[in-house]
Image (cartoon, rainbow, N blue to C red):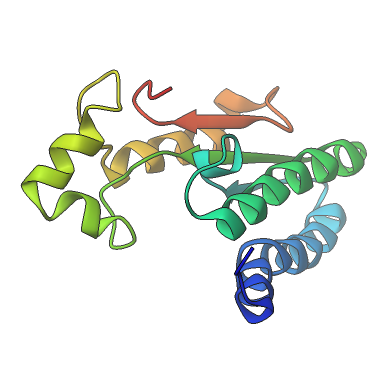
Length: 148
């Protein structure tokens, strides 16, 4: 209720408008080249609401944008998928893993009992970028260690 409009605008511009405009640009080139593959990065916050409300909405929008682009651009042999990481050890999540007590609390939320590593998200991106995923289109792949 107290969110300020500037926060909405900045978050939507970074998390939704940016990927939209960039995808349009690369899709035009991919269409000319006979196809391609776009991989967006959302968040599990886009699948299930959390404390960062505007962020959650922006990531949910990116997931839907991915599905729409995948349907529309498949005719041009352009696949579009999205990875939705949970708590991964990055600079963004540093407050949750730098402090041992906080990391223990957050890790308890994962069925695997730990936070994810950036390489584990990168491996999913490699799969989506490879021919091994040639029949995967419009999907959201959640990488969260089995968190609810």
